[in-house]
Image (cartoon, rainbow, N blue to C red; front, side, top):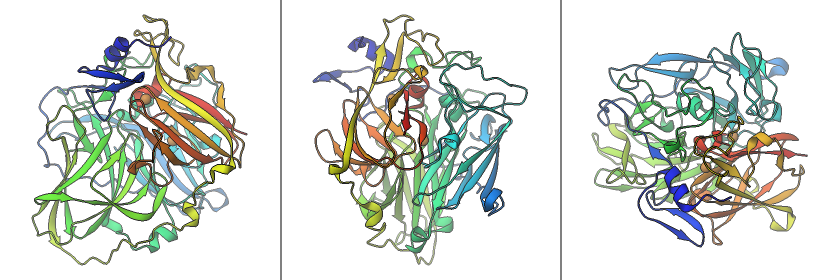
Length: 534
Ligand code: C2O
Ligand code: CU
Ligand code: CU
């Protein structure tokens, strides 16, 4: 049974006028579409642009020391406490105790092992988002790394393989240079686990990217953007349905997603960063649960353009000047910004224009030009090779599939089944093609080496993420793709009622993978399905 319009509104908490167009929902409360409810912090919020932008530490990669000469990184998932809000302490769960986790730099076609040790009190799973990874290392949601002293996973759902305390994830990295990220992917608890800090950047490098002359070193900046809310004591607030994690999900009001009121960049609230008067490469990642952003740069009296050079799966064919950049949850955008020509002391502000609650949008990050400096970088007219960007020929398509992302009412009032098999009090669940994840069935069994056309449709806003595969967006709402669809994609931003068509070549490895909504609250409330590459 479909949820009635009022049920959808009640659950999404969008409020305001909502118009149904051709049976499709449009949430006017957030016109361009975050789905979710704002969680207000208790206690005073920090002032804008006071805290310096932290640059995540680089993970120590031991080159060629793993079995068979593989590169190797060791990570520990653990709790730690540090200062996110000035003067207050926040307990987080982080890789090596930091948020974001250390940035891992891998090299194309050079196998890298990540050895994860779980020192948390809960099971965890690590997933390399955007990685082309064999199934055993892809972070299937029930392939747990169990904490010390726990021998059996207590969560129901599709069967996985669990290990005790440590697990080695093997990443072949036979893929283009790209800005990827790694994060927790535990069944039913990905949203609270990532919210507490289990996420970090993963950059795949190659010679072609390095030879372009794009800004490097301190001028190649990871920007992990994530909204969070804080309690008066400085700890993170999260509206879990069960504080003791006895079951998954969030309180009904937040069923559409949790929107924080503090925007962190690299783990700091609305930070400030001193820059040279030169070009910078910004690797923007939206690591938020439910918030999507449309970023603009206000510079020194006028808007400044971004030059987009890459998207989810690496470089675009040529650079593209953009007035704004939309990043949905899980998406990445590589942009070059030129502070050259600005006087010392000039301030340039990165701002999100989508927030309906804040007039003028949310201020996110401020750059201050601190010094004149030489700049040898450039943005060449040709970025990726034509061969690596070759358009998939639609005549090669051997199968066409449709995936519908929607809220489902299971009779209301407790009939709904979470992935756990427990009822969510609202009686609703987020589903793909009406199926819940716990069934374990495959929604698709694409054949390795073939080409498929996939059609995604939605009710409200859902960013659709597919593991293991990369996609070319060929159509949106019957027309051309949007700017954010450019290049090779692993995460597709679907606004309310949208229809997106992609072509994908089934590459990589045979086995079972997942596809899901990257609104993490939706993912934890069943909006995930299995597919198996055969
Ligand atoms: Cu970024 Cu399946 O996740
Ligand atoms: Cu992923
Ligand atoms: Cu969703």
